[in-house]
Length: 190
Image (cartoon, rainbow, N blue to C red; front, side, top):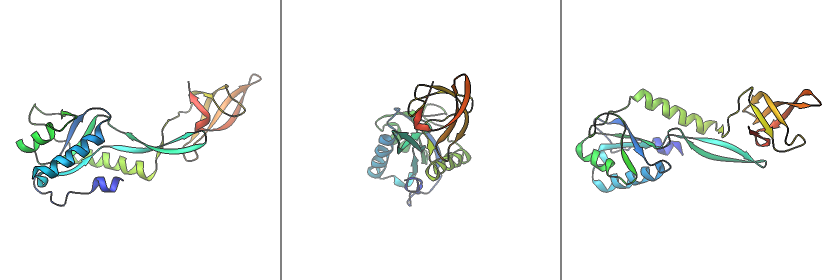
């Protein structure tokens, strides 16, 4: 849950700033767990704060079943709040599946602004409060109907309703455009 990820390390103090770590894509959660374990064993938890894997919840509808999954905003990147010292830099840099820090010079990375971090946290919280659909549709886009009475018809999206996960698609029947209400799961992008 997001609240636990945003919890501040109660022992954290000092001159902490936010940094971006580059990790193997798909291994962001593994890197986060590895960092948490290494920090606990290192004897320097006061030099570290929060560790975030920026992600949001998305809703996907398959065969009429709604499932919620997670989508990362920045695949391959992890945010960490830390006090930059030679020891803390080495701890992070030598964590398995971490390729390095983003920005700055080789052994002195540049921190990102607190405004950027606040924007990312707001985006994460919005994804928890109201999950987005996995597939985003746009008005004017052409889709193919894959379920229901209009199967294999192509149509033009006229309206998208993310609240109800429905589309109004104009399907050509007997040479005339006919508006049809469909669920997201009943169509696929062309």
